[in-house]
Image 1 (cartoon, rainbow, N blue to C red):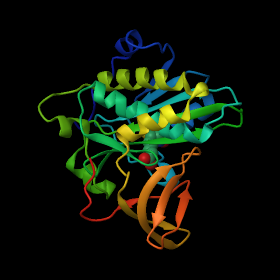
Image 2 (image 1 turned 90 degrees about the vertical axis):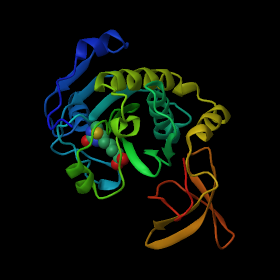
Image 3 (image 1 turned 90 degrees about the horizontal axis):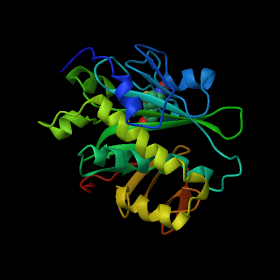
Image 4 (image 1 turned 45 degrees about the vertical axis):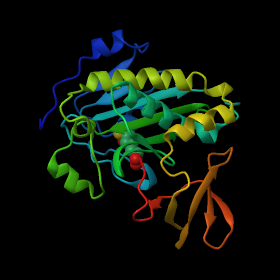
Amino acid sequence: MPSTSKPLDIESIKTSTNCEHIHYFESLNSTNSWLLEHGQCGDICISDQQSAGRGRRGNVWVSPNGGNIYLSQCWCFDSKIKHWSLLGLVTGIAIAEALEDIGLKKHGIKWPNDIFYQQQKLGGILLETTDQSGKVIIGIGINVELSANLTKEIGQPVTSINEVLKDKFVSRESVIIALINRIEERLSQFSTLDFEQFLDSWKLWDILQDKQVSFDHQGITVVGKVIKLDEHGRLGILKNSGVLSYYSSADIKLAKGKDSK
Ligand code: BTN
C-alpha cells in the first residue's frame, strides 16, 4: 500500500466529465474550506491530503496522503428549492451509484450521510453552506486505500474500495470520474425532485430500514426500530415505548446481531 499517492491525472478526469474547473492541490487544510473561500459555482477542489479535514458533527476527517479521495464541489441552486433538507441524502445516492459504476456491490447508505460496506465506513459527506443563498459546498471523503495505521487511528470500523474489491485495482481517477458524473446527474435534477421517486432510490441503498437501532438524543438514549423517512429527510423511529418520533440528525448505532448489507 503506498504511503504517498501518485499525483492524479487531472486531464483524464476533465476529459471524462463536464467539469472544467478542477483545483488540485498536493496539500490543503480542507477542500471544503478552500471552496468556501474561493469557490465559484461548479468548481471542484481535490487535495491529496488535508491537514484539517472536517467531518460531520464537529469530527476530524483524518486525511493523510496515501491514496484516498478528498473532494469538494461548489454547487449553486435556485434558492426556491423545495427539498433542501434532502440534498445530503440525494448526494449519498449519487455516491452509492458511482461506487456501483466502478464495480462495488453490497454497499449502502447509513442515514443520513455515511457510505457503508458491511458495517464498516467507506466514506462520508459534509455539506456546508455559504452566506450566498443557494451556494452549497459538498465535501466527499472516500477511502480508496487505507493503511493499517490509519485504520487504527480512525477508531471506528472502516474499510476502503481496494480492500473490498481485493484483486481488482481501481484508480482514484476512475472513482473521481464516476463520482463527478453521478453527482452532476443527480444534482442537476435536484430542483425538480419528486419525493416519491427519491424514496424509491433511497430504499435501494438504505441500510437501516426496519433495523433495530439506538442513539443518543439530547443526552438520552433512544432505542427503537427504523420505520421511514419523511419529506424533510428526518428518520422516523418507532421507539420501544410505542411512540413514533422523527429525528433530523443522529449518530445511529445498529443493535448487535442485526446485520445490514
Ligand atoms: C463525515 O462522514 O463525517 C463526513 C466526512 C467528509 C470529509 C470530506 S473530505 C473532503 C471534504 N473536506 C473536508 O474537510 N471534509 C470533506
